[in-house]
Image (cartoon, rainbow over all chains, first blue to last red; front, side, top):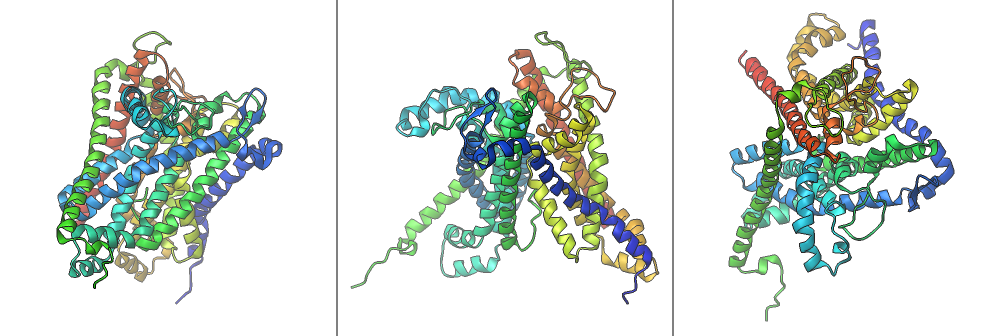
Length: 308
Length: 292
């Protein structure tokens, strides 16, 4: 029987307002960003993304230094977070006794719940002095032949921001990777053991290969988080518009220039340029996020619950 | 003459066992590294914060720049105000969307909405701040608590939608079928029976997203903007705890740094308490309903 009461039809139509609001919101955010950055879009066009100059006085704006800063900090953060995150996930999924695994997972969730402004606070007063006094001189002395570890040592800069970003994104990598590894059918591991592999060989060569897409998805999701991370990065990146290979150098990212300069934008063009940076950030994070979710879905056969 | 092709299985058994042992140790180190970092951060937070936390902090307003003392009473109150506003914005839309997505999940439209909600989750929080700025602050020509609450509220929508959908789905179909067999129209079943059964989980989801949003600073930077005094009007700038912590942390005054640590401890206690209460609530209710 497919007869429906009119009241049912009415209810469904009325209730549909709420999910439609979600669609309207996403579209609305996009269109408002585009329309508010019209001034800047018209004046600079696509060259905005490739211009190194950011001069509020002469009203000449370009986003390249910030795109550079966002890319550098995110990439270095991933380089640091992936080995440790996937390693910890392997430990939790394969080797740890269930009770230990559960308690460590709760602690990892605790790490994920810490607001980023608190990470920034810790970064300013603990991490940065430590970088300035110990880590960066050490790196400069032994690895100074690399362009990454040259330059004056302020403590704040790309390296400090990348480290704190790595700490922020590692819980996401751990929780999603752990789920991906647990989702691998045990039949694969059993066949591997039957062939005489050691535990590590079974995990690394077989489970990880099967879960490769999902872990890649976790990594890209973490990348999306890293791109948008504002407060902690703003507090320790040093606020310097520059493109340089030196990791010791203070720099700037897309999100932190917004945080710092938005309320100080004195002219309409300045504000419009900043909003255009917001638009770039918006589009970048959407693309990265969609990519990540498609990858994760392909392995765990459905949206995972750990992804927050 | 045998040709020796070097694959990993051509190593001696001893080498493979050693490698296995080594890698177990290494992944254990990774897990320990994470715990160590957590421990270091929490220890610093606790030591620095507890030293500065006193009754003044909770009851006084910020002192003028350069003077010692004062507190963050207005920031704490402001945070609660903003969270209240956020709930007003986020819960109706999130809950409505969640109920729709679970009850009419077979429709293509529902899948599109679900995907969009996931996309919303990934948008950086500062972009929400810009959106709220364009939509609320510019027309009102002033920073305000309303715009801050709006920004936080729309951030909550995808999270509330996802958890509401999840918990409404979990209501056993026997309940729905029994109600429908009695001749109750589907919409009544949803409103009067299904949603009230899922209410515990839905409330938990709302609490968890509230905890998430309580710590956000970026969307408030140019919506709520911050305020040094008590605020009774929703159309004026208002202080908020994470915002105050940020302002004090980057300032050059030692006393403000001290207060920033205290604020940070209060903030994280707030977040943990809301989260912990939500988990506890779920545990209690599930034990209660399992005993039925």
